[in-house]
Image 1 (tube, helix red, strand yellow):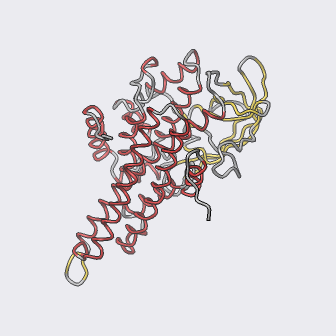
Image 2 (cartoon, rainbow, N blue to C red):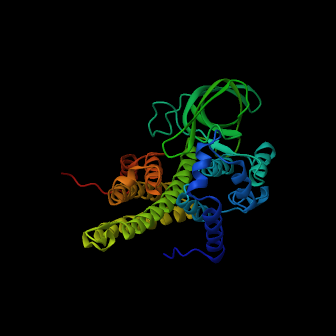
Image 3 (cartoon, rainbow, N blue to C red):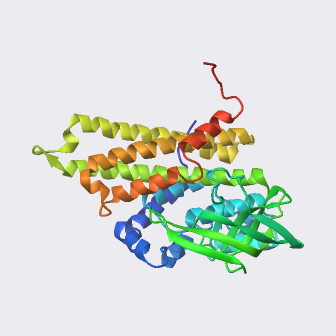
Length: 377
């Protein structure tokens, strides 16, 4: 299978990389993280001008209709630069509206505003104590009138929840999972915002009789929630690839400058072997991530999508741990400090590995799918 990006995708990747290198360097990112908001409105406006906010939005709503493969190109660059803006959260919210929304009226208006850079979204996937179980949903929705409901429940570790203008919230209606849109300023919505160890933002959302609008698309239940999570996972894997590439590069450059016994440690054969192993882990993870993006964009069978996504996420998690640990060791004591990029890259990779399912979770999911061969002991 040919995984070569087309000319448009490569041009987008090159343009975004040039912008991030110039405007979103290590020091600029650090200043954003230390700010009270933790994100930058100026950077978000720049992303909109670059067309990034319109990229995932369907053409019918003012966007470019970008596929998972198009988004993979962008997310790799965001991962390489450790972007802390709420881009991933918003893109996943767009996919939720695309899959579960009606494409009309209020849903269309939300998508159009996202495309213009006026609106941010977030999907509240998990609840306290749910671990990685998407279907452990205790939030309750009670109908008030029409497609309007009231929510009661709590959502935890919602990526950029406090920065989003609207949330996509799974809740139970008569025992079945449904998806709802909740405005950030809705009555009864309480937000606890905090910074995670990788410099990103997350929030706990508590709903008390909070007004919500039920998404009324043909597919807006538990299966769609899993579909949305798979899309989010593919983009997380793409981010991880960018971070792995940056970490490999930073480690190689550092070993060229650090000297022991009168020579750069990059000349030591044992360390060269370790860096080759780091590259092998990264390239294996890249192949499976690209395959997952292709399967997501083209597969009609849900099991094929699940299989590809879980294989990629498991391999990304293994690569993140191996490459991160090796990079820190090769950097020595400096690798543990916030003054070098390696520490920040490893923190981001560690959070990605535990977001929407860790290695063990996705290996178990992969093994549970039809067609997985088992051998009796």
